[in-house]
Image (tube, rainbow, N blue to C red):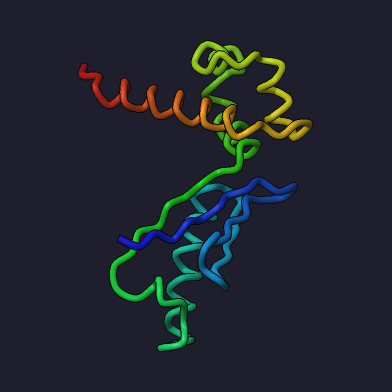
Length: 131
């Protein structure tokens, strides 16, 4: 299935979103949910107003996948994950995580993968929980 890849970034005033692989798809909102909703509206409007002259990837079935930049992800989940908990999960020192969250430093690819894999592992564990 075709995938529309959407990048979500925190700006000074809001969350912005744009398609990494589809020209002309942009959105924004005060929250991540609003930015996502804005993207779906943008895709709908692009198809509606361009009839047959819109990107081919939007023909037929496709999925939309959202991707955060590391700084935005860390700040978005700041109230849920502390730097200490992220250190325990990832093995990355709290100070380094804070540098990524503040934008002072950008993580290397292997560090991004470490954070991503740790979050996916936690999600898998949580999905297996029954109460």
